[in-house]
Length: 154
Image 1: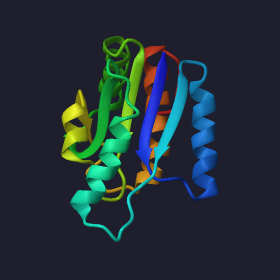
Image 2 (image 1 turned 90 degrees about the horizontal axis):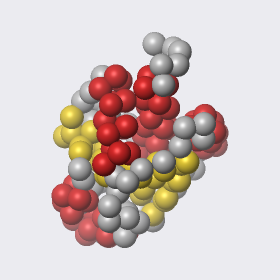
Image 3 (image 1 turned 120 degrees about the vertical axis):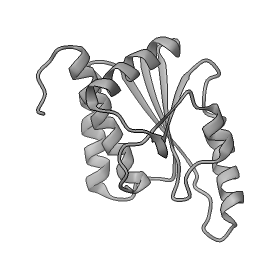
Image 4 (image 1 turned 120 degrees about the horizontal axis):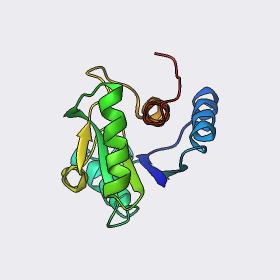
């Protein structure tokens, strides 16, 4: 199984990089993890143009048969147990490859949203796109612990 996270921009804060590395290490027991960072568009161009540029870069990094979940404020919220089922179903439906897409500060292009098999909202609160990487890695790790019947803090 392979988990791929495609996201706009780079992580600049060491503490976030350290947290991401920790959850990648924890997840290695269950799946391989690849994080692909595509360049984010400059703030000096119109939002529509920025979304289009980032979207094209993101879509170019997705294998055609992969199961794709976008993280989107307008997506579905789910409890961890339900999320765990969706993660496993995503791996099954995607030929063992699940792709999570995290947009930049402007969100996601309509083309990226159209490519998604599912839309997930982590919370009605807004998180930075860098922080979202850490949060979603922890939630995927929690999903594997749930489906494996292993103990993990509640």
